[in-house]
Image 1 (cartoon, rainbow, N blue to C red):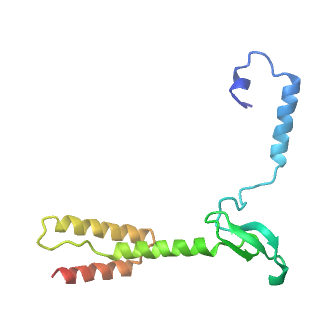
Image 2 (image 1 turned 180 degrees about the vertical axis):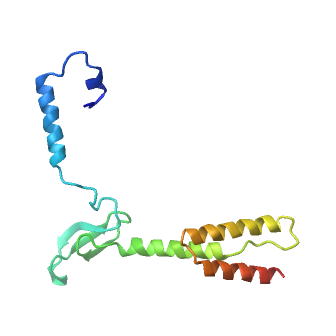
Image 3 (image 1 turned 90 degrees about the vertical axis):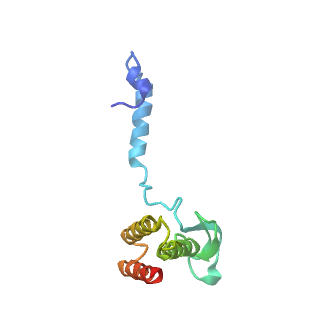
Length: 147
C-alpha cells in the first residue's frame, strides 16, 4: 500500500507507532459517513437562524448556499431564486439564439454569417435550449425577411 512519498522512499521499515496511527486513520476513514450527497455548494436552504414554529413544524430560517438568499422553510428545500435565475438565463439564451444576425443579403459575409447562425441553432437544439421547431421557424422567418 502506497500512502505518500515518505512511505515509498523510507529506507527503514515503518515504525510500529506510525503504522498503528496510519491503520487507525484508515479505519476511521472507512467508517466515516458518506458525504457525496450532502448539501455543500448546492442551491438549497440550510439553517441559518432560529426555528419558526409559528409557520409549522420543522420550519427554520434558511439561507441558500449559492446565492445567500434567505427564507423560512424546511432545511434542504431548493432555492427558488437560484432555480428561477437558471430559467431566466435559459430564456435569454433561447432569445439570443433565435435572433438572426443583422446582416444584409448584399453583404459579402452574408453566407458565412448565416451558416454560423445555423450552426448555433443546431447546437442550441442539441443542448435543449431551443426546440427543433423553434429553430426551423426562426430560420424560415430570417429567409422571408432577407427576400
